[in-house]
Image (cartoon, rainbow, N blue to C red; front, side, top):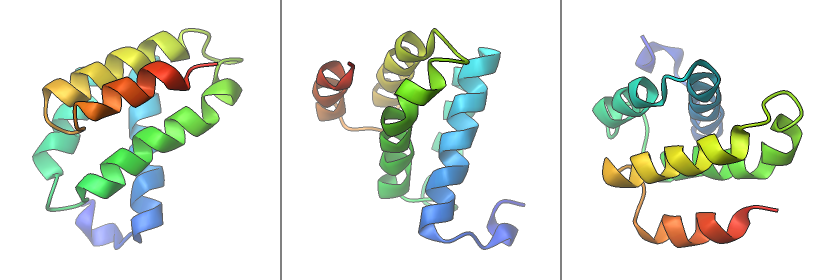
Length: 100
């Protein structure tokens, strides 16, 4: 179904970001990461996955008003994504320095 949407690369990144944010709000991070992992290479690229995580970083300050645990959840999500091979281990170092 996702492939049938014919999303541009930018739209894929936004879709993935929304998937990740929704999964954090519902406590279903593993489910979202599993879907991302299974469809990596078919529906989106490594760069689009990384772009989604970057977008979350970029809007984290806005999300904290509605979702106070966003920073902690994002940190945990990044760790899980690295463990699953969705992000490179070097992303952990960048993530540790990105929080305000």
